[in-house]
Structures are given as C-alpha cells and as structure tokens.
Length: 273
Image (cartoon, rainbow, N blue to C red):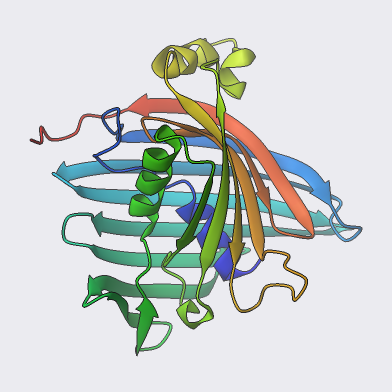
C-alpha cells in the first residue's frame, strides 16, 4: 500500500463543510475493515479507521484520522499505521496537513505542509519530506470536495469530475477524481442492520435515519494511471447529507478492504450565521 493511496483513503472520509442542505455533523467515527478481494500474495488482512472531525471556528474543520491495517502474506505479517492531522479553512481556502506513516512500528515517511488557493491556482508549500513549492491548477481540498459532492448530488447531478489536492507530496502528478452518484432511500447503515449486543447498531441507525443518502463510486487518477484508463485507486461508500460516510470499500488495485461504521458520536459545532 503506497503512501499516496493511504492519503487518498483518508481524504475520502473528510466530511462536507457547512453549506450543504443539512447542517454539517462534526463527529467521531470508527470503521472496522476486512479483506474483500485480494491477489495471491495476500492471505488475509483487516483494519480499523478511527477519525474525529470537529470545528472550533465557523468554516474551519480539524481532522484527526488514523488508519491501521494488518496484512498477512504466507508467514509474514505487516502492520501499517497511517496518522493524519489536517485543518481546512473553507472560507480562507487554506489547507494545512501532516501525515505520518509507520510500518511495523517504525517510521516510514512524514508529509507536512500547507496549501492555499491564490490567483486561480493552488499553491503548495511542502515542508516534509523535503521543502519545495508546487503550483497546481485550482484543486479542491478534501472537505470542500465532499461539500461539492453533496451539493451536486442534492441538485440531481450523477457524475462529478474534480481536480484535487489531498496532502500528498507527489502533487505534481495532478490528482483528479470522477464520482458516479446514485441516490438511495434512507435506510439503516450496514452497522445498524446487524445491531451489536451493546446496542451500537441501533444508536447509529437513530443518528442517521430519515436523511438523504447517495451511493458514491469514486475513481482517482493521476499521471501514474494505467494507459488503458484504469484509476490508481477506487472507493465506494454511502454518503449521508450531513457528511457522514458508511458502507466503505477501498480498492487498492491488488486487494480491497470493506467495512462499515462500528461507532458514531455526533459533536457540537460553533453557531454560525
């Protein structure tokens, strides 16, 4: 699993900001993942995503995200641990990010920097793994990207193409995504369909009931994409109008991880005009 694909997996869970039809839900969520497809080299895999997205100022969203996955190949087990912290100031169009990746407990890579929209372009000031400046075509940041998906889905659009910057240090590869959106009727989440003994499934269902929701199939492309048009990463998920995601599949090409919400806590946000 490359650093870029791990960052993409983090970015696709960053929820929408204020401005969607329903007020944005700052929240904490835990997702349990298991292997759903694999090549011959991977015997088994499982993982967990734990994330918190909150706000201490109107239009400013702080994401604390951790993605831990364990892979077994014959007799070898590899543990990958991605830790991302970012802040997106939607009105100010500024995105600060820090991502650390560990493999079997040892530091593998750190990515750190800031990006902002300026004069019709997205300008990235990378601090780590090396200092460099990158100028991109105007590209949405993760929170604004999901905001755009919800807005356009609510308007009845079914295909959304977007240029993105998600905090990866290979930004020169010009990341973009194509999302195919299908509306679904309000229903219990995957987790809620099979309540646990402590009632967690019922609690999740209550927090998401009667909301508009869409099944999103999103493909990511860059200069490393297959000449035949195959993306570098694909994901499908249910996206609720308050920005919460569920029923995930993360397709890394040679294998896929799938899972759903295990725990969901809704958090308070500032009162904004």
